[in-house]
Image 1: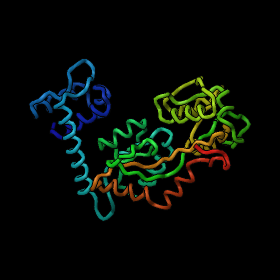
Image 2 (image 1 turned 90 degrees about the vertical axis):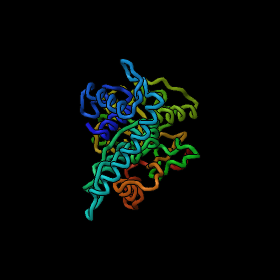
Image 3 (image 1 turned 180 degrees about the horizontal axis):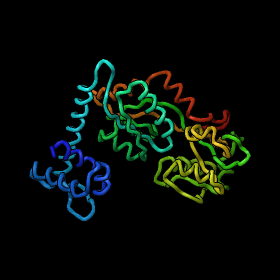
Image 4 (image 1 turned 135 degrees about the vertical axis):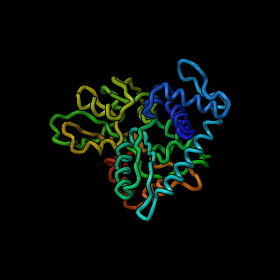
Length: 318
């Protein structure tokens, strides 16, 4: 096993924070992962991982090795892409991530990018906002679609491109609807009286929803909680509960029978969404191509068209 491969396993361990899951992600056995970590320790003459039955983190020396490993792997990937690219266009893998509520738009973006540049292989990942931001900072994520209001004011290391505004709807079952139907506007206070399936409290979207209910002067106790946006829609379709979903997810359900979506008002809540990347000086060619698509006027129109039904004019915005 060469050193570069062993360092790749080390980075996988940092990303998954679990020996078994890291080994599975690398398509190796857990003993093989342990042997690779020992090879790294022999190479540098220091302990890298805190030894225990479960993963407990890296030693201070291990953190330095990990940072160097990320730099080496990043340079290796950039060089590989540069050498593989030719007159036909950029080539290589590109790690794209989105918060769960933005996955419908990221999936469309990946398809458009692949159609424009067949040599690029997008990896489309769903992540929490915190994991997404950590991945951008660590350069383990190339490009992300997330909540722009979470970015710190002093975000010198990150660049952002606004894409659309996320707004919110109450989704309920309606067996009479032959396809997803548009219902009349509904106040957040009225939605609070219904049995709700919501995302778990650790998700940023849930914090937005809770804040909207608070502004409406009500508090809610969900009937069901989940960390999956797909589960939100499926539980509504199964009957017995309703859910709050962003417009992009509602738009992805067009054509689905038995559902009705009501724009939520009083207040109308709007959250800016956008692509985010590390502001490095020389991005690899695959990332350059993705950033060009992000800023393409045709793509921006498509993103706006698939961000879902627009909020009701005239109500107070958040």
